[in-house]
Length: 160
Image (cartoon, rainbow, N blue to C red; front, side, top):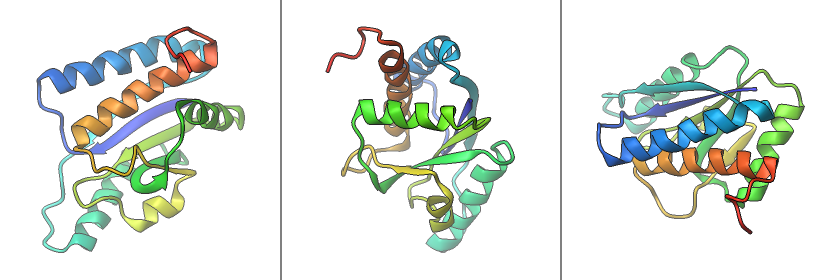
């Protein structure tokens, strides 16, 4: 299964981008053997629309259009489920084992995600009850993707 991360907001060069790239690189190397291939990152600018609902709708359109057709979605949203690392790894493995070809992991902008994205998602995932800047959310997602591969392969990186 090919995984694409689609996000509203661009990471500027700096330590956050370096850390996110480090974990994505580790995921890309370790995931292939498990049938979890990293297909890349797509970044979109924030909408400039004046109304919140319109901004969310515009951003949702950009996110969905940037993913392969028929891609299943995992939406990162504060209203989502808070999973353990083991449960997240199991969810990825279950989607892979369904024979899905593509999975999009979507991160919304400052206003959050459009309700249509959340409704379409196979999993709405929360990184906790706190609100995180998109740069930190991307680092946390990248690390959890890598951690999922270590859990699924029995690597000692993850110690329960």
